[in-house]
Length: 186
Image (cartoon, rainbow, N blue to C red; front, side, top):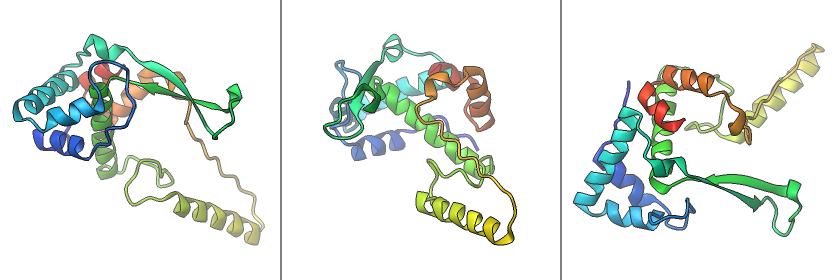
């Protein structure tokens, strides 16, 4: 199962459903521009092929190598530096390519059972509340049986800048992402 190649119908479908108010790296292309372009046959075919070139060859356009770190409030009105969250704004088509690769990688991981059963993030038919109930039931069972036990919940959120590229590349390739597509990400 490998569908890293982007087809025109998926490309158009994504942009039809996209919210135009999403922020991206400030340049000529915006979510509104891409959404409008996806409604035109020639422009959407061209853009789809350009993204496929990047994914399949590993070539990253120079503008994909520009990004902007933006700090936003976690809570309204709280402006302490420690209370801010940093997000990265990528060019809009680069952001789309990342999302496409991530979705396809997760599909492969689901089909091949490569994900731990307790991994709920970014998975269909998995809700955070179900995981919380399982965790509470596990603790209850350990207490009733008077057995020692531990649960380690590791959330890599906000750690993406320290993830080893070699390890991430191997994990992505294991889940169906071609080497060239990994190269265009890193």
